[in-house]
Length: 70
Length: 243
Image (cartoon, rainbow over all chains, first blue to last red; front, side):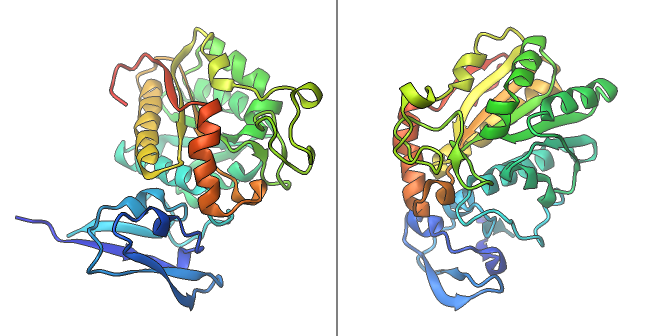
């Protein structure tokens, strides 16, 4: 059975460094234009483009993104 | 993940490599079930915040003295797991003597040196690891070998120490290298768990604030310029596993 994967974004931790956007192979990530409690313009994902490869979760220096399996 | 305190935001600057190292350590402690008997000894500098985000025992040592504190801890509680997390300013400049003697003795501890080439916390001053021609507030015209000396290659130097069971230089410049770094760190932890001897890991990390660069540019510099002079490499592996 195929596992159901989802990309979880903990936007409260995001510092808008842009590394995930730079390394995303499908260009599914972007800054959303809103601000979190720390005042950073946090990251958002396009779920249709995302292939749940967890590249963003590997490079993220602030543990914002991770792919979780059901 | 129990080891990692997700509710507490990192105090490091955006894009800091310390965050990646902290996550890798937390993941490995969790995967190897070490949390109940782990002690982390941190030095002074940005690396000194490492344990704030972990649910593990921790000690803060004086500047450069993490390794003697870790050695004492290991002698008192030999079954516990102890690792030190230090920056290059802490480990390679003031703590160099401690590092070399612990390595020569083969004390079964793990030392992680996060090498970003500057004293990040105090404003990006020149450290022993600053590369030639790199500009910092204390060498505003670039580091000059005649005036400031050459950068210290700690991993190459440590090759000559007989007590070292695992020695590698890792990097967090790209996702591929981060995955490789996790495998290397796992080997270093295993070297201590199997009581093979001293394990030392140097992790190349960017300091976008200290280097006065944009985050993505600093990661590119790390992958190209820094990796040319300090190659990512496994020097000694007595554990035998793949990394």
